[in-house]
Image (cartoon, rainbow over all chains, first blue to last red; front, top):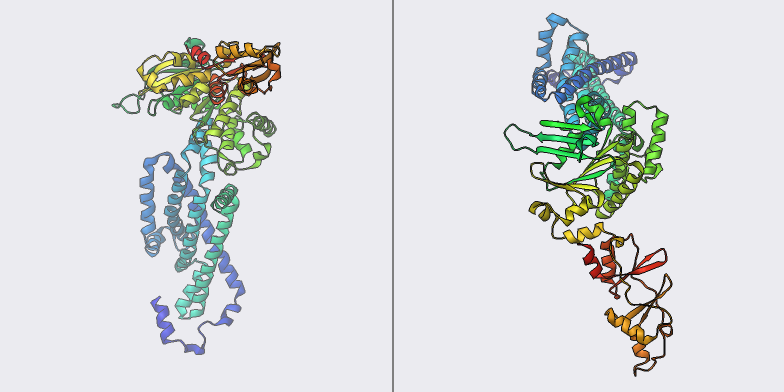
Length: 239
Length: 376
């Protein structure tokens, strides 16, 4: 950020550009913007998708064998605290510059967030519902599939929202190793000391985060029709 | 009771939750006969719920064996055993994310019935538990507590299990709904003939519902196991007596019906009885009225205060009760009226007696003395 600040103050009118955002530069690149959007979305979806699958497995294990929860969150925490740049440095010799390295970093960030919310969700299922399911003759697996996980959907969606928004932000950093969707604009702007692409990349990634977050809220509502009814009843009772 | 023929047979069952602590259930041997309703009743911590939950293996016994329908309960995997045992709990535990239909159809779904058969069964069950069929497509959150309770019972009965276990099923609903649901259970039982074990801390509920009651003491010790009337009449020990409480006599009244009492003729006259004889009849019964009967019918009653007012000088000795105003008899009970209710009729009416009438046939009167006599 200091580079940006230095530029804004010191060299604002160099190259004859008199406005802070050069709109022409943006409007001349619809294809590139579209392509970066696809790339950004792809990076996010793949990272959250893989993170979701891994976390779901880890959460089910953590709930089934309680003692594993400590070690799982410990590892998750460790991954979460490693700075992304440091992780790249460590990984590049093994996985090279590119998609895989970027994904490893992104996925490892989602795990702590997702496992925590999923386990909380699975733990918050009313004991009576669980007892009823057991007493009716649900096997463990069946109960997990048709009672525990569906009831944890609100918590799971909440976790995915945080993970997705985090990943959308982090994807921009992976531009440093040759990926990165909107991050490529930011990188470009930083390299050329040219603010327009920086602002474009940053704004687009914020916009994308907002859109994805809202979309997840809507998906969550559609996936949990029973919740809406409970809320309505609650509101009606409050009136 | 013969454990070999019992639908549920607990043989010398002990449950310890920790190695060192006291046993929750101690060497319990108890049988529940087929199609019988048995209530486990006792103070909290007496092991009644633990015992219930051992029957469907939600809790595994530490020692002893439990047979269900003659079969060792661990002959099957726990989840298969449970599909043949209905289970209803206080908090009901309906699946909030499933429609009422799917909730009721849960066990048939586990058993792999096809959709059509499940739907038909759901339709039958809502009728059986007196639920409005339009509720089938709702979610549990949209139903009242009483309705959810009915769904809980329907869900437990869905796959027609021979056994039904109920853990404090009516504790969470208000007293009026509770009484209603208890009645419904009895009506339901007349149709389905299940072997039912119901855990409750409410003595009245146990007496009302059960064919036999097991009184539990701390540590899962059964102090007495017998028909409610027998327990009320002769508590086995001080614990049982104090658990039944001071209202033991009144509770007994709930079990008796008017039929169990001996009726008396009371001050019954006919329309042609002279007023003078009516006065003697009333005096003999220490009342100031006479009932007018004709054949097997009770026509009503007349007040002798009215006679006093009409003929203050003692004249009118030629008059008959037909000259007085005939009034309807209000304090009427039927042979199947519980004695507790009959007592209420007697103490709240000015006649001090209740007429026993069976489909228009008047069979006599009962007073507080007859009720006291019935308690022995």
